[in-house]
Image (cartoon, rainbow, N blue to C red; front, side):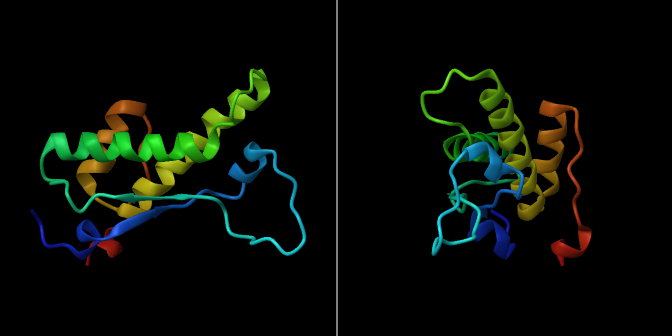
Length: 122
């Protein structure tokens, strides 16, 4: 397993500001302004292998769905917003993790290329 510190740490699945609208929860005074998220641990995965990359991608999608998808709604607009939220959350997490193998896997699955900063790899 590579010794890159990011691979040994847990990643906080952060959501962009637009994802807050999906949650349809009114803001209350005194509550945190922090976007909801889930911690996705992946230190147990070997991201140099396709099975490890696929497992991490599945974990990221699952965490994003837990945060973004409204419980028990059949509203088409809310479902569309939830899908957008999940897509943005997964892409942002992939950018934050910044592992080229994961970015390639994401591009294969979605047809979109995430923004990867090579400066983060140093």
